[in-house]
Length: 223
Length: 301
Image 1 (tube, rainbow over the protein chains, first blue to last red):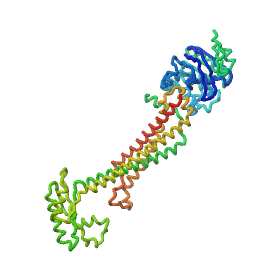
Image 2: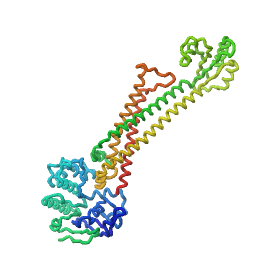
Image 3: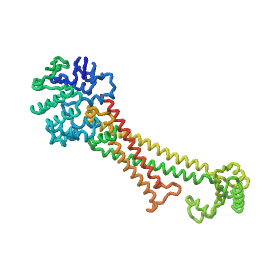
Image 4: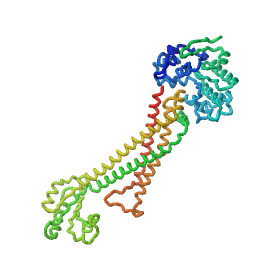
């Protein structure tokens, strides 16, 4: 599903943020990415969701070698990835409903075809009565849930989440993790970057740890 | 991209705020473009009118003798010239202008004074050439000179060439102004699009990140600039059209037309041509906005 081989990344003339990162995410796997702040987690995620090209090394996504793939093929690859951004990145001029429906619009689906799915998902994440609200009127936790709903609504092949439970209370956090697990059970490959040790310990998922730009520790998925 | 997807791109961008100055600039440009286009239409029509009025006509002027009384020499030479013209191949009609008609011709320059009537004015003969016929002007001139030494033949070719040159200058100047306005409009829209992209950079980056095709994002911008430009340019061109039509009514409010200048008004049939201005401006804005967005998106990974 995702393969990194000796990937290095630096921004401009600065130091390498990622060094010789090599790993494989198997299809339908569930993985936590951990590490201290500034270790390069967000940069690694950016490479994975095609926001930046690596400075060196090879990245293979859904069987496509990104170095040799045509740029015109990238939009289709990106539509197979759901991303929960740490800063949510919701569109303030659209309602919560429209924000969640955005990936489906971009995929060319009609509103009458997806309206029910979006409403059910928003209700499931506890925002059934806030569908028409624009993001600036929502709390941080509510915005995070809208961002998560947007990432999962299209049932992506790969779900990447950067601190997805950072702004919600533990109960909602567990509910969101169950949502990710359910999606994973249906075949989505999930990668979650988090500092929440409690979340990781309760899970049997694989853990990858980044320290100073190097992938130093791997915990295999427990049975 | 289907019509449905085009509609879906509709509200993906927030409404542009503070776009009024751009609309105003586009409206002013469209107004100037419509004035230039209208001027070219007036010049073209006038040139055609002058050409139609003068082509196929020749004039013979018989001058009074330098010394002695004008008569009877003037009448004798006029009769001789008239006889030659009436018998010449290719000329269907030839008639001398009356004294009153001759006075009317010089009236714009000499006025209506009774003194003018006493001046030794030349006699004019107006002749019409048969449509499609070719008259040997040099041979006719020689014959006229032999019979009436004080006669001068004018086939108006010199005037037609000069008037055509004048009209062509006006028309090509108008086209040059239109081209300059088109370039300026493209530059303004390109600048505005870039500024808008900058202002909405986060939205564009997010849509790009979520897998929106470049065409989908570009459509959100080109649609906006197409509609905004169509509206503003229609207002500017509409005002110019109204002015051209109003110019036709100036004489009713006491403004006298200048006799040797064409009327600076458009006919009702010509006014629809001014619709080309908003349509052209809209097309320029659409293409410019689209190319600007696509170029900017190519710079994103």
